Length: 369
View 1 (cartoon, rainbow, N blue to C red):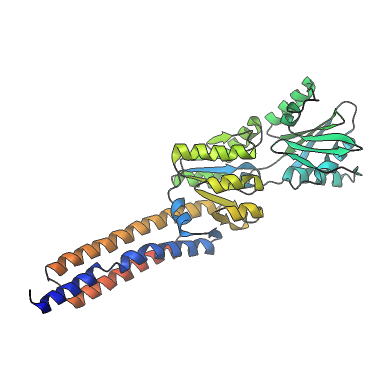
View 2 (tube, one colour; view 1 turned 180 degrees about the vertical axis):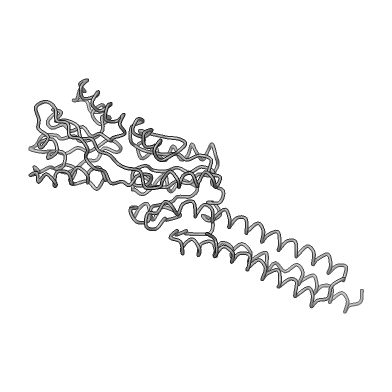
């Protein structure tokens, strides 16, 4: 080749191999996906989370406040050992008014409705996943699940108490036993309701390719299975302490590779951080959960979850399409440049045209529904 011909061929190769379309195809798709998600009430904190969401096959959910409304109500008050319903509720509310848990709020609300005078309680001590302890009149008060009393040395459970708790839990209710100075005052039964339309939402997730929907809860197995039947999850992990949720997520990751976790509370934060994609409820979610999560569902709308999964899968498809188009055009232009079967003008037009094509293809995500 002459010097002039060699220079011209070199210019052709430089233009042909320039990776403009290759470089812009993925960021354009990611930015379009994040923008469309935000317009529809889903806040995604980065492109990697959008892409990872598109690979998810297993999703885990906290129960209270996520799959259910998280607004408990006291349905039954069962006094025992000579105590009255008013005494039982007042003692429990005096202790629980120091807690921010949804169950505690329901107990306090029930006491307020009955206009009960609450005794003065000492500082609250949380026993993770089991209940709370405090002092009234310098005597210990325990309020919590039956596990709290089973793990406390100075309590012995009688059969009537255990039978009543078993009956209530078989009905899908959450139970709280209350004791004062070593004496059982009775049992409070509370009920939570599934979110409206949650079964249809989970069905849509399965249609999108989510193979397992796992519920993680600190409730006992009977209550968990009752709620699971109502909402339509495929697997249930019950009787979990906060650290057990973290272990459950790790086991799912070991078995399936990528896992998404959806939750709203402080206790969910470690699991949200460990999951491949952590998803927090934006309205009712605690500050810790929102900060830890990778995706936030604004207005607590779980109905946006299938949208987020579908959008992420669509974004991954468009990224693959853009990579195929850009690499295909580069390969074609290199071959034609080496054979000198195309002019420099044509190379520029085709190359820049491919950049416009991948950008327009990425912008299709802005119309995703």
